[in-house]
Structure formats: structure tokens, C-alpha cells
Image: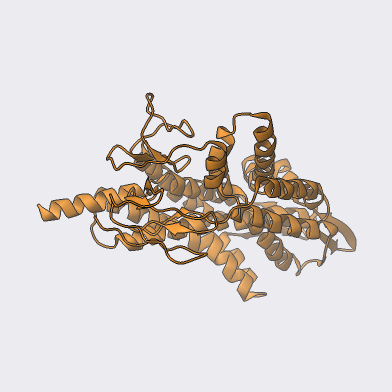
Length: 427
């Protein structure tokens, strides 16, 4: 069966020839996104390759040496105390001066009884970045000491979704605009460290090529023969035959044709998200006390009040807090129903929508970061105070469940349903 050519950067395009033709050191590989079996020719480490059927990237050409990654991780580790404990913003409010830090906002949330939302913000802005740095350091030292690196390599791909320093950076801008009606704000010394930390984390995640790390630490002979028994491992992206215990030879994960209970877990996460979004949008998400008067804001009313001062920032918050969560749920329900009813039309569109919500879904945490920082900026007892509303818990939970729903959905089921519909139509 003839396959389309892959798209490669860094040189002339390479062509995937017919399965069975002799190529210099080719390897058979299955796409982890659509399960297509193709013959991949020799690809340089600086080249990218895409699946000929679904156009998912099957080879990443971005690769930094482990020493460079370790140097970046060490620099991030040195910046973290200053970025998280030093003032991000300096505030002059009602004749008094105060400093707003990341840890202070999280502590204010927890002290007021919002422990779970505080834990969400803590993990995404502190826990996940620290885990990333520790994981890279573990790889560097573990490689020297001969330690087992498989658990860390398996974790790295899943961790990328949860490092949200860039979103917190946008949250600082939004919080500053919201508070400028009440106080005079200046950037603090910690802001420069936080910006540097954010840029380093972005660069590290871009060049963190787990595929090359797997090949470097646990090389395995590639599949040279075409057989229907070849399976792709979702954990390490390796294509091969299961071992005697039905596991991947490289990462020792169970090598199954599809993810176990993918549809059931995705449906459960989507239903939870729908249920949680109802109180998240009806209940107040923030409460401001001005001279003893209570002013409550839902997500939408807060966006409307923000639009009176800055329409662009209000648009960003609207997209992140309203449009993205509901759009993700709509897309996920559509994908699940298309699998159930074996829809034949619009497969490529559904695949593009799945990749889009995978990329944009994490930005819904913006509102949680804004609330955390605003609680650190405004805390003046009876004259002026800012507290978190009950909707914050429901909104944060809905965002977490939508992210998990996307991760749990096996995209290969979309192709299975499409092929099943085509076979039924042909019969």
C-alpha cells in the first residue's frame, strides 16, 4: 500500500515508499495518534517527520544535550526562590505599602478555607516546575550512577501540560489591571526573576525531546519486518512486539492495542466538567469589600467590569474562562458521540479540533491565577478586602477534569470508528 511522503525540515523531504521496499536502515513504526503502520526511512536528529495519514509529528528534530538541559534546570532552580518569594508587584493602597508574592497569594487562599483551589494553583505554578527541574537533574545524575530512569521519562511527557508559568505571567498582567482602580502598582524585584524563570521553562519544554532521551538511555532494535502484531507504546512511543508479559521492551508499560477504559474515563471527566461548570458560572467567583460594602462578581460580571477599563485584557479573560472550557466540552462530546455512532464524515476536522483543545485547554487556569494574585494585592480588612468566592472551587475542578478528559481520550478510537463505518458502508 502506497503511503504519502512525510514532511521533513532541515533538508529535502524524505519519502515513505511502499511497505516492503528496501531502504537504508528503515524501520517500521506505528503512529501513536492513528495507529497507521508505515516504513520510516533514516531521519536525521535535526529533522522532523510527520505521519502520512494523520499528520501527527512522529519524530521531533529539536534536541538539546542532557548537559545543556541540566544547566537550564540548575539556572531555573536558582531563580525559583527569588521568583516565588520576592515581590512580584509593589502596591500602595490607602496610604500603606505592601508587596505581593506568589506564595503569599496561595497562603491567603488556604487561610480563608479554600485549600483545594490553593493546592491547584500551588501545583501548576510551583509543584510542576519543581518536578520538571528535579526530573532533569535525576536524569543527569541517574545516567552517571546507572539508576532506573524509566519512571522519570514516562512522567516527563505528562508533566509538560501542567507547567503553567507562562499562564501565571499573563495572570500578573490581568491582576495588575484589575487592581489599578484601587491602588498604585509598580513591578517588584521578583518579577524580573519570574519572567526569566518563565522564559527558561518555555525553552526547556520546547527542546525537551523525550523520544531522543528514550533512544539514548534505553536503545532498542527497531522493527525491520512488517507484521500485524506490531504495537506502539503510548508511554515511550516505541513500536515493537510485546514481551512475554505483554509489556513494552523499552519502558515496561503494558502494550495494549488501545488505552484501557478510555471512553469510560473520558465520559466521566466530561460529565463532571459539565456539572461543575454550572455553579462555577452562577456563583460568585470573587468578593470585594469596599468600606464594608460587599460586591460580588461572577466570571461574566468580572469580565464585563474589566472590559470597561481594558477591552483587550477582558477579551483574553473571556476566551480563557468562558470560551475555552465550554468549547472543550462541546468538542469532547462531539468526539465521543462520533466514536459511538461511528461517524464517517469530518474525521480530519475532528482530529484538528482534538489537537487544538489539547494545546489551548491549560489556559483556562488563568482565572485561578488572577484570583490568587489579587488576594495578595488587596487585603486591607474592613476598608478594602478581596476574598475568593465559592465558584472558584467548581471552576478550578472543571478545568482540571477537562484537561484529564483530553489526556484520557485515545485518538486512535476515532480512526477505528471511521474505518468501521467505511467497512459497514462497503458491505
